[in-house]
Length: 87
Image 1 (tube, rainbow, N blue to C red):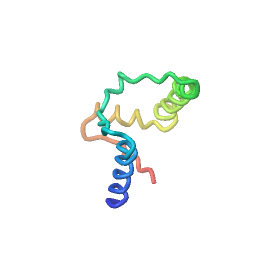
Image 2 (cartoon, rainbow, N blue to C red):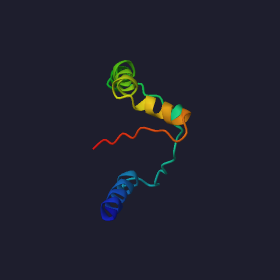
Image 3 (cartoon, helix red, strand yellow):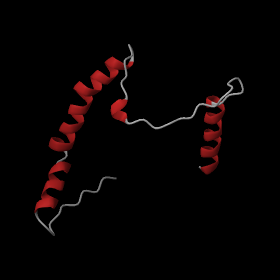
Image 4 (spheres, rainbow, N blue to C red):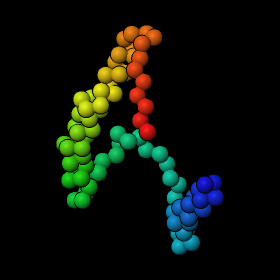
């Protein structure tokens, strides 16, 4: 695993700082709230995620599996908790 990580890092640095570039551009972290995606491909995909995927995931967590309710019960009654084991 470590070897794969080192190789991947080396390849990324080679691509970012290839021999054709005079100066290597540094990669700096950016706060995700400063990122906007305006693209003909990604905008519809992100819109679908926002309108369809996220509400379905929330509904499954809250309504279908009652996992969220387990956290509420665990927080309200000390010493009493249901344990869910998913395998």
